[in-house]
Image (cartoon, rainbow, N blue to C red):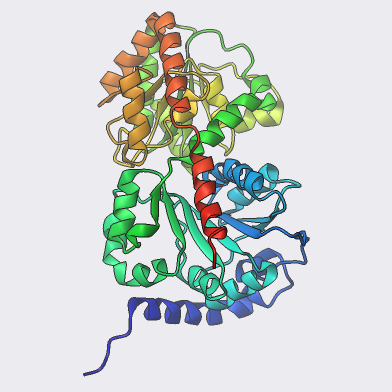
Length: 430
């Protein structure tokens, strides 16, 4: 009877074929640029120290920001370490360059092609490859482990929506997971899900969410000065609806229209999760008869925000915009998208409103509810009622914000625990 090839073998064969097809177009070019995705980096300086070489990989902007407190915690444990940080998106790369300037070498991540990951590992020879959240790349992991490099998943997260797909691919991931050193997960649910995917039980830890450590550090640095200048004096109650998805802008505009009827000086700052949807969001604002400024126009002209509403049509400033709010709504939660980081406004001591779908941030959302720092709403009507109540009772809103910030403090220390998981692996006797 003919033996069926494993799913991992099929994956490796397919990625090899894809790399052979793609390599002539970009991989043979000069180092850097497109060739970086094939692991062909320009000559970069990585200090040759007596400490370990540690490679941190983050997907995009949010993960890069979570990597910074993890980096700090690792640097305390390994003061002579040399660091490389990679990201999978252009926005993530730009953010990582700003976050790690002078502290680490920042490069684009290699594509998960056999030749690409070999080239990348040849460039830096890391002692540990530290992957954040769900960055599980079979070829990269297997090649690193083959070279004796410890491979760690930190701030590990497996969403309820994706676990079914991952479990269906268990025969792909299980042999990869056997070559990894530790799985330092955010919450018990994440630990249970990655166990279902085939991770060895004895390698799984629960350490919390390092993104919350990053939020406190960002808030301590204060809001972006450019944002402060553009916002000017906002006057009446300010409602920020952040990371909204299709269908949620209507709810935010409905709530704001109710606010305007009672508080004519009120302001709305509306930030869709994906800025390429800005034209669709403009249509929603028009349908409610709301005049608005575009953040890109204000940035170009230098004039301050003066309309009732502000449409955030560029990446980057949302966290600082929460600073300007009296209360905030976190999108992806009235529609079934799993929610977004409900503790971002809490870092500025702002009350947080969110919908029923907060699976990706369930522990933080539940804690906000229990401590009185957040309100869960189920509809546009409930969102409007909650917003009006906060406008009518500013002292209550202020107390809610203080409770929200206390909820953030309850989640501190995760980066240190994830760093310790990596340190335990590196310090383990061979």
